[in-house]
Image 1 (cartoon, one colour):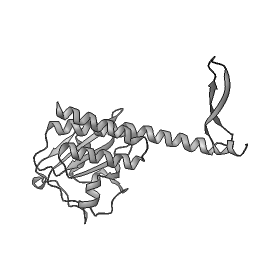
Image 2 (cartoon, rainbow, N blue to C red):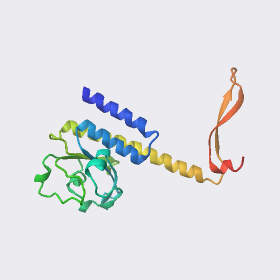
Image 3 (tube, rainbow, N blue to C red):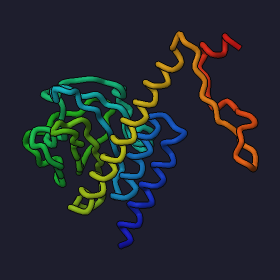
Length: 212
């Protein structure tokens, strides 16, 4: 019960945070919440290309960036085939837990300055049957379990939904700002009898401003 309350509180915080922060800031905040809820020390969020053959690192958690990982890989784009064992979640198309990372025979070396990994939990985000993103947390002091999987899956899904909406809003804003035609959205102000008496501007684009 307490775990569910903590997850719902985190969800509400993220939805509120998304209204006035950038996509990258939202992703980092999501990772911070995932770390807190699972007792993890590191976290990352990748976007996956439409063909699922490559991915891009979009965010480290705050703690990862400040304390653990000095590798200069934010924004890096690389093939799934050369990534570490955490992409098992892409190959297997399901959440993956590695509770004994050092014992994995197929693990690969880390880039210089990368955070040391002892345990990890990595989940894929699906949309229309395709993997669109991957969220991972790591280095919990005890083993990850199915409760952690449920928590991270929920936050990863929420982050993707919110990012998609923010990107759509940004695309709309860019189109709106670059329109050659003047555009203005007004709110009509009525008196006590419901008769229009005035109006006010809610938003205008740059082209409209040149007309006034």
